[in-house]
Image (tube, rainbow, N blue to C red; front, side, top):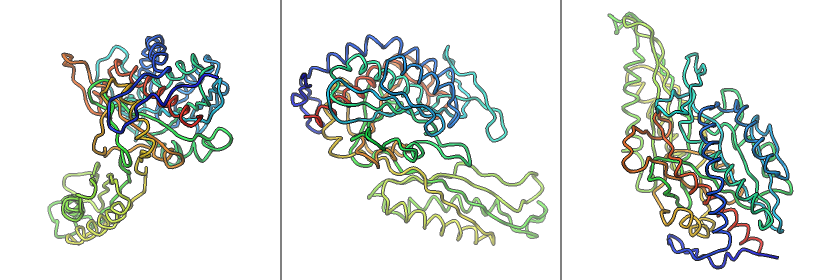
Length: 433
């Protein structure tokens, strides 16, 4: 039986040196063959975005594409709208999982692209646009491209590939479960097809086709922060007649900036405490009795995470008390740190360099968060970032992820397809031998 000569790959950590392996030319050729249709898929997903746990049309399109490839199994309705495809290769071997997320964001697009989203929805009672402002349209298109490439090579695949299309990465609606955590709860990695490794990617505003990664903590844990300040309502002309929660909230916001900058040893690991919303009152001449603030806490070290939670509670409570107000602090623990298995990362470095033509590099941790972290807690995982900035000379306005100007350069798609295809084949071969 034919085997891929993975031993020919030089997998030295942090080097760009990669020797020849039989699957490389095949993956590259099949990627180019399918690229035009993959770009068309990306544009379709971009023009038809759907929010978390509501990706009905998206899921139907993905399932139709996977079934058209003749996969052994296509499962739908996992974690509400998730889709999982199973490809059993022609050679015996283990199972590897590849993951893409599906949901869009409540963002009104301003890119001016010919396939820009015109979808609208009600979000928090306000009509807003819906946009793939985080690049999940590219993630889905890339993974479908990988499914096409590996389906073409099915006879030579040494094992099973699980294609995971996950809903609600940006978070499910209130009072609903969703995302990777719910997929696992419903048995994603259970049974005979339990994978031995999982790979995924996320696009970001970096040089097109470049790859960024790091072993161990790659992306931060993300916790939801809510602070309710209670005062005593009074006339705006007589603040001494009550307790002003807005003034107290200002004290709390300022004091919270010292939690990371003055109370934590940030030489150990970076951390962020951000207040993102603040609301209170309904008239300029009335001092309200309540202010509600919400925000996020980002950490990369579990011990620091616990300590920051305690210090945020103490600092907010004490700051409000200086104005005779009270603060109720609620912290909901969210996504864990996205951990890249160090051994797996080291073994796959050569593949990332090959896929990106030597443009793969180790970077400091990112303070964004990803629920890929749940998958990587179940089995060894590797998550990396793929650059998608416009080509040099293209002076269009672009923004970071979650911006209405977020832009994905289609020129990055083949790098993503090569990377995920190569990671799957390399890992399967190394485990099968």
